Image (cartoon, rainbow, N blue to C red; front, side, top):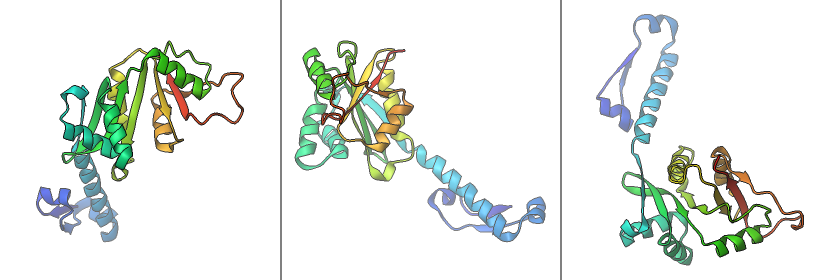
Length: 213
């Protein structure tokens, strides 16, 4: 079984002259052989495509204004993007993933002040100790065209490696299924509610915690 054409043709989806010879010709029909060859080409293209993603972690102070604006655009638009852009500038670290030089995923870390953490944990109605959780994972987002390829998970792993062994919390304003599943795989758990918290929950969002163990 084989195909005639340039190696670059496999990556670009070019046409190949397909031939079925030898043992495969005795075991597979022409249609089965073609299907197997097409699947092999698909896997090669998929693996090559993953090499086009490049992740980077930086201090916001190192970023040009256009770079921060591009990160914010992945997370929102209009006035929301402007607010996100301002918040990113106060991050401890910000990470982003590019695909063909375009930013497609973002994740970052911040270190909120004690008072801010106390207010946040109180609004979330949790019994967890805000004094223990000093690091916040934030700005989680990925372009819809690049979901399902593990790129946001890889970026989150890089962010968490910067605070290895230290407790981290995440606040999700909406119950985003993709982000929720990502956090669970990364070892986060939904924060326990205080005994006196409203049974219907709060409108402060969903708080997830990951201890330093």
